[in-house]
Structure formats: structure tokens, C-alpha cells
Length: 348
Ligand code: NAD
Image (cartoon, protein in one colour):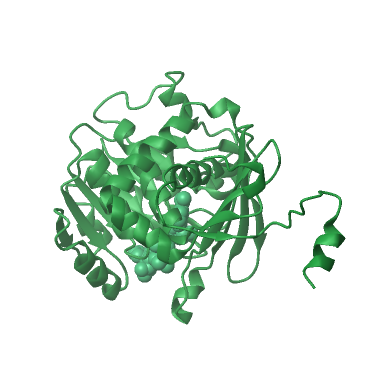
């Protein structure tokens, strides 16, 4: 939906309220399915994207990150924080917004809230990877960490992978109660568990999604049997991991963009010679995914800029003909390009 030059001063802004209206209009699971396909389509053209590890500003309590990328035609960036201590203060651990722009003029195309959109794109990315790597007919998932991301993760695995049962565990029972409540009526069988060990009983997919700025061991080696797919999304920052390194020694590990994951992912615990596969290579057939039913596959997810790009483009592509946005004049655009000062004077 490229706007005509005369309209360029106004761009659509998708607020939190409008993002929620958008999602309810199209349906949570439908958005998750379509977003999974959009993210996968961009992973399949990996080479065209500009890729750098995200810029991270670390502080005692958390991190603020900028995540840019471009496919040569469009550019996007996301501003996102990660503050595990926020929850105790009544704030979100992760909050975000993002911008999509044209590369030819450098003019922005859309500004959007991305706190909800990040939860959707993270769940869609998990599901995209799981539909290629999880054991066949994976019907049961364990969800360890029942915070803000949890329901999105469970619903994406249901909608895209066909999961039927989710087994929940969180150190805070209130978080599990909230997730049980929110997933009522979703069509998932929801089981509340008393420990991580209990939660992974019979699970084909284990998602770890906890938030703690520490080297955690949510899963130890003796807990993980053969044939499992692990979707580790909570460890996404230097000094923040969820898995014991012995699990990594037994698993085949798949990552988004290796230079970023080496800094932020579970593999920060491993020697630089530890072998990983960038997931796009599985999609294009250049690398093997799951080889056999006994293999442990691990998606060491940290979140990568192309996923946000795909999500912003997906939202932008569906805005036309809807009222799920406001027009904002974020850009000063005088009729005579060199007469910026004249524009200011005429407004007096
Ligand atoms: P949140 O703070 O809302 O929830 C985290 C939950 O983990 C809390 O309910 C907490 O009680 C629980 N928890 C902490 N330690 C635990 C333990 N040892 N065992 C079981 N549960 C434990 O956070 P969120 O928004 O759900 O995000 C979770 C994590 O995922 C964060 O670390 C965030 O940075 C990360 N994340 C990653 C991606 C990605 O793309 N990989 C995207 C979004 C968020």
C-alpha cells in the first residue's frame, strides 16, 4: 500500500487499541497462522536481508534494544525492552513499538505498537520452527514460564502444529492460574502441573519461557528424554539462559542468526566451536532438520529483526480498507522540499 507522494506526510499508526481490534477482527488463531506463513516466507529469502546483531543497551535491571533490518525495498526497526524486574513493579517485562519505512525515499510507512505484536511474532516463529523440527504428531506441549508470552505460545502450537494438550508450570502459581483461565474455551486440554518435571511428562514439545537475568537451569539433562523438541525462548540476553549445558551437548541446535545467538542465546554457555544450524537453511533444503524420532532438536530462540519486519509488513498489508489505524503527521513534509522554515512560518 505505498501512499501517493502528496500523502506522505501522514502515515498510519496502529495503537494498542487498534492492534487489539485488528486481531479480534481477523481472529487470534488466524493471525497466528498467517503470521507464521509470513515469517517463513521471509526466512526462505534470507539472503536478501541486511542482518546485524541487535544493538543492546544493558543496565542493572534489564536491556533496551534496537532491531533493524531491510530487504532492499522496505526497512524496519523495533524498539524493545527486557526487564525481568518490571513485573514486581506492575510493568511488562517486554514492551515494544516498531516502524516500517520505504527504502527508496526513506519515508516511514507505518508506526505500530509491538508489545502484542512481539508476543504474536514470537509465538508464530516458535510454531514455524516446531512444524519443521518437532516429532511427527506432536500433540502435547509443556509450557514452563506462564507469563505474558504463554497463551500466545500455546495457541500458535495448537493452530500451526496441531498440539492438543498444554502442561503448564510456573514458580508462581498465580501465573499458572491466569494462563489456565485465559486458555479456557480455546480447545486445548490444559493441565496445571506442580513442577517442571511434572510438566514435561509425556510432552513432545517443551517450551521454556521464563524471565530471570541469570544463568538458570529450568531444564537439567536428566529431565530431557529422546525425541523431544525444545523451544527455548526465555534466554535471550547475555547472562540469561534456561538450559543446563549438558542438554546442548546432546541436542541438535537451530538458531535464527548465529552472530546474535552466540551473544544472547543458550549457546553463550558453549565453546565457539559448538555447531549450530541457522534455521533458514532447513527451509531451503541446505541443512537437515529432524533426522529421526530419537533426536533432540533445540530451537535456541532469541528473537530476530526479520521476524519483526515480517510482522510489520503483514499488519501493513492488511490495513487498507480498514479503520484499524489513525493517520499521524510524524513527518514534516513542506510542499517545497527546501522550504522547511517557510512551512513553520505559515503555521504561525
Ligand atoms: P513474564 O515476566 O511475563 O513471565 C515470565 C514468567 O516466568 C513469570 O510468570 C515467572 O514467574 C516465571 N518464572 C521465572 N523463573 C521461573 C522458573 N525458574 N521456573 C518456572 N517459571 C519461572 O515474561 P514474558 O513476557 O512471558 O517473557 C518471558 C521471557 O521470554 C523473557 O525472558 C523475555 O525476554 C523472553 N522473550 C523472548 C522472545 C524471543 O523472541 N525469543 C520474545 C519475547 C520474550
